Image (cartoon, rainbow, N blue to C red; front, side, top):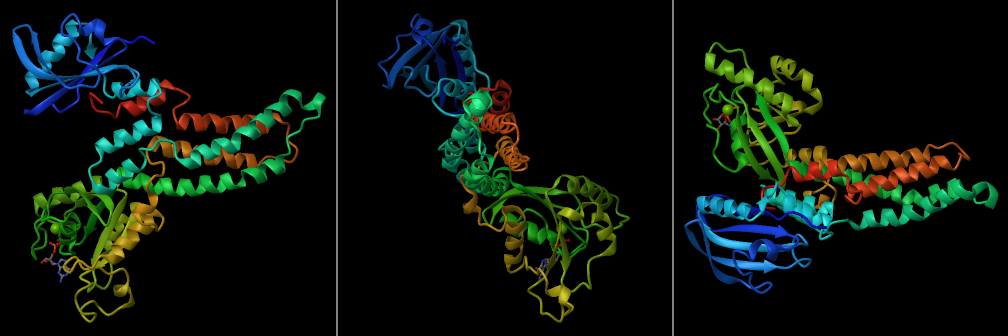
Length: 441
Ligand SMILES: Nc1nc2c(ncn2[C@@H]2O[C@H](COP(=O)(O)OP(=O)(O)O)[C@@H](O)[C@H]2O)c(=O)[nH]1
Ligand SMILES: [Mg+2]
């Protein structure tokens, strides 16, 4: 297939040592040779690039298709890292008939040319976007493409699909029937694998996307101290003066292997101070959007503040109460049974109870590493959920159904498997995936 050649900066447009401009197309000689002679394949060669009054000495590489990243001819210009120079070079390439690429278009071409699959492309996109160590490792764990369990699922479903279709086409005259109980027995291991992977992918989704957590509680409950402790840096001001934190502070960090977005909030209380009041109002918007609300209650308090409980009531499903000041003696902690539950100390860093609770809630009790390699993006998780649903419907079929019923359900499963790996070439799905890419990848 002939395509119009594309070009894009592969490096950020910032003053830097080197900028790379990449060009991909089915026959780049035709477009570039009138201007420069291309070097031998896969050799870095210095060339003077001259156009419109500019004179740039660049390193040029040529990767002929199909053995290139995109599967097409690929040329890389390594020029001095001046953003204006890169713009001028791209303009010149445009005058040669090489247009600016869309975000992700290089990878999209590599996909269409069979150089990589959609799952690999998604892993690549997520790897580039990863901001914490766990996110980086999570994305890298998916870089191998189609996981073994998915290939096994296809191998398990294919023969049943063939038999179901034969039963539909020839059943009556040839006496071919589909033995439903036998099939359901045969697919039972797959059913277990799907469910296990669904669990793992829920957890992997949190690792990929990060967990948004708001810290709330009465003034001086230790919110900012915990915020700083989890973030590993002194971001929020901590004093013993109630009402110190007035705005919502946000930090992105990784703690206990979990990528977190933390929101430190103003203490939730009625206040006359107009600035503090605005801070309290902002908390409401944060509570809406977070995945978890950590309600901090000093262990010496007799219990949670009723006014705060009332404010948190609409979010009760995502509130976790934590007792703070766990380092202080149990007498000063009120000595009640309530005070002993879920106690942490931000001062000493004894936060094991919090770590355990987060793992329980978001990773199904597993360690972050146990979730690596599972399907993780929203697109992948939604398709996996649908796979599980579809397979369950097979198990709900009445006895001796007409063969069309299992046959169409199996075809549905098959279509979902193809959509997951992008082999159905559905443009809408590709658009969704590649919208998240940066220019030049
Ligand atoms: N002993 C002890 N003091 C703490 C702990 N957490 C916070 N503090 C102290 O309590 C006071 C209020 O803490 P701060 O984090 O500003 O509370 P906030 O108003 O909820 O943000 C400060 O003097 C902190 O040093 C803790 O776990 N143990
Ligand atoms: Mg504070």
